[in-house]
Image 1 (cartoon, rainbow, N blue to C red):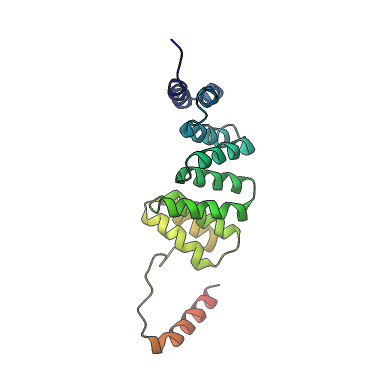
Image 2 (image 1 turned 30 degrees about the vertical axis):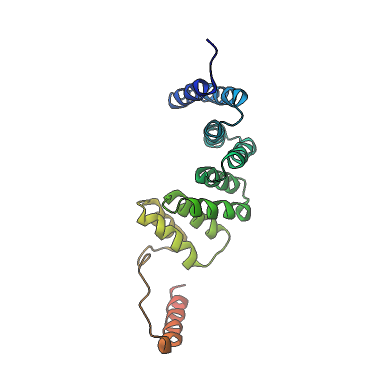
Length: 184
């Protein structure tokens, strides 16, 4: 009996879990050879290529294929953004993290990686902390560690701004600017 693409895909998953990474990559490749529309095989091979095999350019090609086949796959954008960061292409990674958040607003890794990426791009502390704070809300404790590493504190991270009446806004924002200036 001739093996189907799904058989090779499942074999790839088993080999990946067993730590047989070259075999897993070969199984995913065979699944793709049989069915070039097997987005899951491209995704799993892409993750394997960058996380384990350190084949960053090849993994980008896999994630591009996933996005071409399924433009609503938030994981493909997330992982492609991570790979771009590994390649120090931080500006190129940001749109991928934005798209991952747009497609799956509950994905903590998208917020976490977008926050780290914004830090590398020298974004405002408030924007960086907003993403890392969102990751914390989704139970990503490493985000608090990242804030401490970047800024020395994680206090009052997700604290909401007080409601300020329109006529007092200018005075309120001036107080915040002075407070932030003194914190740096």
